Length: 638
Image (cartoon, rainbow, N blue to C red; front, side, top):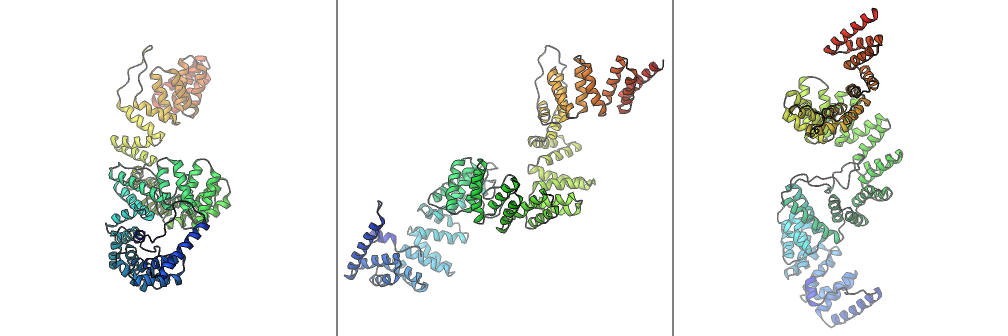
C-alpha cells in the first residue's frame, strides 16, 4: 500500500514524524530518528498506547515488519485506529490481504479515511464495485485525497458523470495524476464542443517521411472552427491543470503542456516543458523536443533526442531519424531506422521504406512496402500504391486503392480518383470525377477546386465557378487566377480609350488577378496584363510583360511585343519577335513580316511569308495574305 497511517489523526495527536523545515545532514537525521525511536520505545514499554502506535509506524516505514507487528497489534487492541490501519498495511504487504481488510474495516468504521480508502481498493481488486464505491466514498467525503482519486477512477470506469467532481477534488488537493486526468477530460470536452485541429504526437516530419500515429493524441494545431466560448474555457482550464500536474513532476502533463505552448508559438517555454518531460523518461517529449530543435536549425541536438526517443521505442522518432539520414544520402542507415519504426508498431515505417525505395527506382520493393502499409490502413501509402500501379499501366488495380485512400480521408487520393474517372471520357465517369473533385476541393485541394470550377463554367454556373476559382487562386493556382480574372473581366463594361495626358485608369480586381497569375509565370495572363497596361498608355509596363511572355514561349506575347516596338520605331527588332511568333504558328505575325519585306523590296522573302500566313490563318489573315502574295508574284514576274 502507498499510505501508512491516518495522516490527519496522527498529525492531530502529534504522532506523525514531520520532515524538518530546514536542511539537515543525513547523519543528524539518522541520529534524531534513533533518539525518537528510543523515546517512543521506552514510552511503549511503559504502556503508552500512542507510543506503541507511533513506534509501530516508524518500524513499518523502515521495513522492520517483525518489530512493527507486535507494537501495532498491541495499540490496535487498545483501540487506536491509526494502528489498526497500519496493521492492515503490514499484513497486506506480507500477503495476508483478507486479514488486512478486516483490520482496515475496524479502522474505517472508527473513522479512518486512509483505512476506508485501502478497504475500497481491496474490494475493487476483487471485483466488488458496490462495496468499493461505498468505502471509497466514505474516504473521499472525509477529504482524503487518495480516496477522492480512487473514487473518481471507479466512477469514470463506469462513465458516471460524478467522476469529474471527485477527480477535481483530488486535483485541488494536489494529486498530480488527478490533475492530469482532469485536464485530459477537459481537453476532450473542448474538442467535442469546439472542433480542434489535431496532429498526432509529437510531430509530423515536414518532408512527409514521418506521419501520424494513433496512440495518445496531443493537440498540435489551432482551433479550426468558431470558438463558442465553452470550448475555449474548457481548453484554458485544461491548460491550467496540465501546468499544475507538470509542476508536480507529471511527465505526460509536461508533454501536453509543451504541445499547447508550441501551438501558440511560445516555443521557448514549450521547449522547457518538453525537456522536463523527456528527462523524466517520456519518449514522445524527447521526440517533440527533437522537432523543436530541428526547426530552430540545431539538427545535431535534434538527432540526439530523436535517438533517445527511438531507443525507448518511439516509432515517430525512428522515422525522423530515418528522414534525417535519407536527406544526407545515407540510405542504408535511413532504412535501418525506418525498419526500427516499423518494429515499434509505427506503420509509417513501412510507408517511408516505400518512399525510399521509390526514390531509388526499386519499384518492386516500393510496391511491397506500400502494400504492407496500405493493408495496415495507411491512407497515403494506399494512394502511393495506386499511383505506382497507374504508372505501370494497371489502372484497374489502382482504382480500388485510390478509393480506399479517398474514403479514409486522403485528399490527394480523392483528386487522383477524379483524374482517373475523367480520363475515361464516358458521361457517367465525368459525373463521378466531379464528385471526387468536389470532395477534394471541399478539403482544400487547390487543383481539385480548379477542376470543379472548369466543370461549372462548362455548365454555365458562373457563380459556383467563381467561388471555386477564388479558392483555387487563393491556394496558389496561376491558371485559376487567370480564369477568375477572365470571368471578372467579361462582366465589366469596356473601358474608355486612353488619351495622352489623361491619368491612367485605376486597376480593378480582375487586373489584380491577372497580375497575380502573370507573376506566377502564366503566359496568357502576362499577355493580358501587357494589353491592359498598353490600354492605360503604360508602354514600358506593357513591353515588360509582353517580353516576359515571349521569352517564355508565348507567340501572342512575341507578336504584341513586335507591334509595340514597331509603333516605337524599332521595326528591325519588331521583325525579330514577329519571326519568333510566326515560327510558332502565328498567322498575323507572318503577314506582318510579309509586309515588312515587301516594303523593303525583298519581294521573294515577302512572298514566302505571305504563303506562310495563308497556311496559318485565320480566315481574315489568310485572305489578306493571299492578295499580298498574288501582288508580289505579279511584281516578281513583271
